[in-house]
Image (cartoon, rainbow, N blue to C red):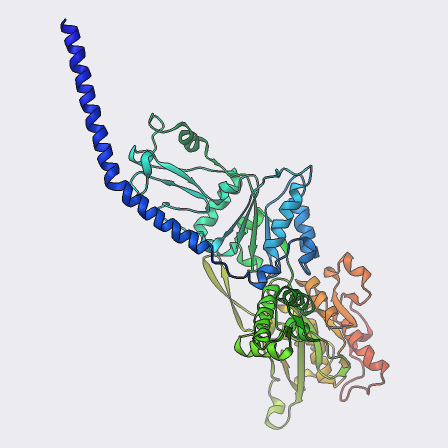
Length: 562
């Protein structure tokens, strides 16, 4: 009997407590749910209304490449990227190049191409996760890390039911979302150094290890999948494709050592003109003859060409025309900060003290570098003093951003002038009787000794009054013994010279590539004497007068040292 009474009492207590918590739960829902439902419905109505409003797609998005044939001028870069990602062992890669040349589109298309390969490890559903490194904020408290991933600890707002139970919750980042596919990290050179170090660790381990002071391996309230994450990490086996407009020297050496490197070259004026034509067609407008070339002359990249065309098309349509005219483009140029591309055409003919050197600007952009020299014979009070040799138009110092550091480097172009003086002195020329002024017109950022040979030819021409060819270009460092030393960026320099109409391009023997053999206009040189002789030969063939005041031939032209 006593046992039955106890059972009845327990049952009553259980029912009473159950009713109490049930009524408390109903009161809680009655207090919160109606307002929450009303707020949610109102916000959802706003979002649906916003989604009904759509603007026309900008032209630069309409002309975005959908296949490889639409990526203009990057055949070599795309070929290299395919070789890196489409094989059985894809590698991490960094893409260098100016903005608007197709780096992002190429990476997307190459992944789609890789998915079709039977020997590729990328599955049919391999993700392409795109992220801008400038938006990958670094939080010292590790509350949120959109790139690597983080842990939502119970103490933070919005921890949810698991947080209320004291359970830390891992939040995957972009590296985990890209597992099995490609993580495209744009502007990777802007990544915070701490984030860069974390990324390098992930590339090495192919997983993300997370930590939390609130995690206890023996806590039975923690779900099994969270135990597994803290024990084994989040998977992050992907291939990194980083893109940057910076130069390789500004990228972390540790990252570069883990990645292949591909350079996307700048677009030529003719190529941006083609993009302008495609943009005009997408806008439903025709173009006046020569208008596309005019736009190309002011557009360094495809995005610039599309934007300029879109605004010019708007001007034409506002005037009731469906044809873009040069006047429309000129109106846009006056309103914007557009700068015309430097003229790469060689002057041609024979001139005294005028030589075309070659330079590299930015990411693999070759540039014809005009060099002018003039010599003045000293007289009066200056006749007994030391000669004054100076170079102008160069960058004396250059500020380089190298990750978290900033370096200031002095230009070595001015120092190359001292080598020129020493070599010409060995030739027997009475250089002490003359002051010499060498100028690099145009304000180009000349640096490095690669203009040494061109400077020496210009100086020799000015000192001897001997005209030299204006249809040739040369690059190379000048050694003190008259040898031509190797320099960097030769393929880009050669491409710029040939595009500018050079009849002959002289490069150091050590920079001569097998691919140059098919182009007879590219000639390797080992010594300064060879280069000078070639620049003088055109003048000799045209019957130019012998040099005034010096021997007709410099001694080093007649014989080479042993």
